[in-house]
Structure formats: structure tokens, C-alpha cells
Image (cartoon, rainbow, N blue to C red):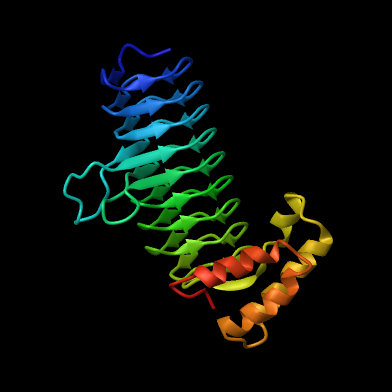
Length: 256
């Protein structure tokens, strides 16, 4: 299951059923869970842990040093969950001592070709980064978010769950959950209704989320005023809680 032309450090730990293609280099302090497939010409450096049933395509660079001038060789980590697909030429860097120490990627994510996940990013589950989408350092991405091709997220940005960023979006503020954005800089254009329907959200819940969007964006409220109105909606709709929690924790301000 390991090609004779691959280079595997003796300290690397590969579980049963792991496949490694030719000319791949797996460095020290790397752990790869069972059933994972690592293609040819991949480089994986540690400390990196990768769960089960992941697939890494050719020419990806996983677990490399952070691209941060403050990095001075500290031991930092990359943690990847299960069933992720990492396509060609994707680059994923480890964390830094100045922040989370670890870059983390959850489960069931699709990172298409040429995507970049910088140091200290925290990604949830079921996320799609389309071709050449790039995350600056310290970016947080919630579950089920989608970033279109060639979209870019500024350092420390937070991208809410179930949000949708159109192709080429330039994200320099936080994006609340459920919101669709587009443009340079990214601006809001309603909620991701189609994505929510595909994920089984009821028509009633989607309608409530649209009301929440109007409170945030259409009624000229400050964030504090919007939060007061959203808390009234929250009595009837648990999904509104994501709006509230996100706005309460946003430090960069939200896209407008």
C-alpha cells in the first residue's frame, strides 16, 4: 500500500489501509488514520495528525511551516479530521505560538485545487473551498460554509456557518451565518436560501432567518439594536441563535 518510491520518516505513524503514492514525502511526527489515501508527489510535514478516510491528491503541501515572519521554529501543529478531500496544489500550514498553536480542519471538507489554508485557521465541517480560494492567518470558517473560486479572506476574519461567498469575493470583515456575499470588498446579498433548503431547513425556519437578515441589514439598526430584535425572534427559532452568538462575538465588525 506504500509505493517503494515514497519516502516515509521512521517516526511517522500510518494506520492500516493507508495508501501512499510514488515520490511522496512524509516527514517526522506525522500520524495518518486508517483508510486514508495519499497521492503521488505529496509532502506532509509534522507535527501533523490526520484522521480516517482522508484523500490527498498529488502535489499538495500539508503541514508546512507557517508563512509568518514571527515564526521562529516553535513546535506547532496541524490537526485534520476525517473524510476530507484535499485536491491538487493545496497548501495547509501549521499554527503559530502567538495564537492557537494549531491549525485545525474538521470533517467532510472539500478543499479544491490551489486552495490555501494559512496558519492558525480553524475550519469546521462540511466546508467547501472552491479552486484557488485563500484564507489568511487566523481565519475561522463555520460548518457548511462555501467559498467560491478565487475568493480571499483577510486575516482574523470569521465566516459564519451556512454562509456563501461568491466567486472572487474579497472578505475583509466578518460574515454572519447564512449570509450570501459577493464583490470586492464583499457585500451582503440576502441569505443562502438554496443551500439551506438542500440541507433540510424548513420553509418556516428559512423565513425566520430572512427576518433576521432584514433586522441586521435592512432596518438601519446598530449591532446592539439588531441584537435586541433578534433575541425576540430567538424565542421561536433556535436557528436565530447562530446570528446572535456570531454578532456578540464579532470583533472585526460584519460585512455591510
